[in-house]
Each structure stands twice: as C-alpha cells, then as structure tokens.
Image 1 (tube, rainbow, N blue to C red):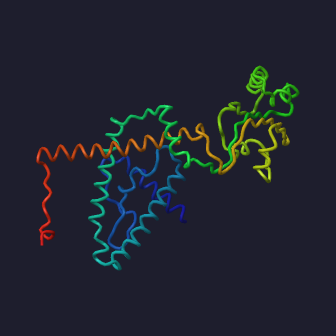
Image 2: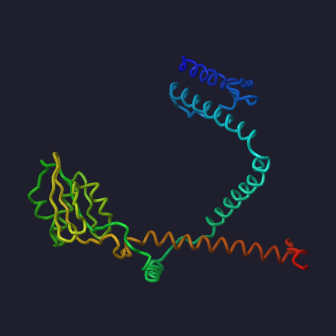
Image 3: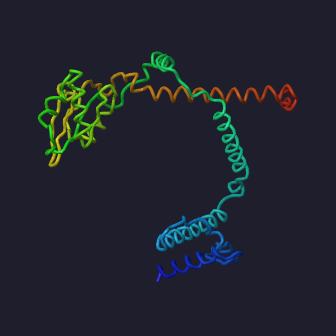
Length: 286
C-alpha cells in the first residue's frame, strides 16, 4: 500500500513536469505549512529509474515533514532572542560573499610555484616538526601468477643491486606482473605495502631491521619484495616524503599573506579617498 502511495505521488509529480503551468498541488502538510508539487522539481536526477525516483521523492517528503515538525516545536519553545537569527544569517551571508571574492582574487594573484630551495629551507628550519607517524619504506615489489613464465629468473633478479639486473627485473614486471611498484627511490607507507602483499609481521620494527628480501604466496600468486630502505615511526621524516606537504604549507602561508595584503590595500585606498571614518568613542573620553 505504501509503495503504491509513493508511486502515485511520483507519477503525479512526473506528469506535471510536462505541463506549462504547474498548479499548486499540495503533497504534504504540517499544521499551516504545505509542501507543493512544484517544490519537488529538480530533486530527481535525469535517467533515474521509476522505483528509485519514487524512493527519492518519498525521502524528500519525509525529511520535509520531520524538519517542519521540529521547527514548529522550536517556534513554540524557544525564547524570542533565541529565534532571532537575522544577525547570524547576515554574518553568514557576508562571510560567503567575502570568501568567494577572496577566492577569486587568490586565483588571479597567488603565485603557486614553489622551488626546491624553498622546500629545503622550510624543512631545515622546521625539522623538529617532521616526525613520522607511521613506518615507511623504499621498496620494489612484484605480484605474478604462479604459472607465469620466468619465475626462476624473477626470483633471482628481484633482490639484485646491479643496475642491469634491476632493469631486467623491471622489464619482466611489465611483461608478466599482475601488480608492481618499481620506484625504489620513492618513500611509501609500510601499510600501503601490506595492502598489496600478504605480510603481517607481529614486530614491524624488528622485521624491517632484519628482513630485506621477501617471497610469499597465496593460493594464486607469488609476491617478490625487496626493501631498499626503511624508517620507523617517530624517526625524522625524510624531506622527499614531506615535500608535497611542505609545498602546501608554503602556498597556504602565501594565501594568508595575500589576503592580509589585499585587505590592507583596500583599507589604505579607502582611507586616502576618505571613504571611511572611525569615530572616537565618547564613553572613552569620560
């Protein structure tokens, strides 16, 4: 019965969209407030199925009813000063307009290029703030099917430190790998490695200190892992791991500086043009 009611409301709503002038048909009421058919326009995305559309419409109606029920209670039970939200609305409106304008100015005037020297200087001057929250590794790994060709060769090459053999391993990874990570100059979270390779050491610190080459398997695949370097939680975080974070910090500092500069320029211009006046507080003179 409920489904039929929902579908009826939806069909009534859908059909009315083809009319040039939609009459104000009431869909729901809470005391003296009404939800009209025209209020439902645009809430259903195009190409939504009839069943999903009916569900969206019903959820909207239910939400409208509940909101207005609590609003009615609030109107009855709150003091007048608690219900006077005009100032908050005006403050919120001003904040939104200022934010939109400043965002546009930032887009036009902010320099977002950050040099390697700036990143290095920031890191050197704030190194005490860069402490690892998690274990990280420089690693290369490869996942292959158990029946893949060249398994014997892969087993020999994945742990190699010779450039020619590493290049050969990378070539085999591209040919036969299901998944792989080959950039062993990039720091990644050890957690990321564990998401890809079924290794679950109980003592991660001791494991990383003692294990460099790992070969494990599951029912379908073999995994070959070479850990080139590691750093543990609470160690100093390396610059290369923090570079993007530092870049964002520098850009955010520039944003704040630019906003302050824009506000100061506007103030000075208005002051010179006598567009502003700040009057003395007579109470302060007493």
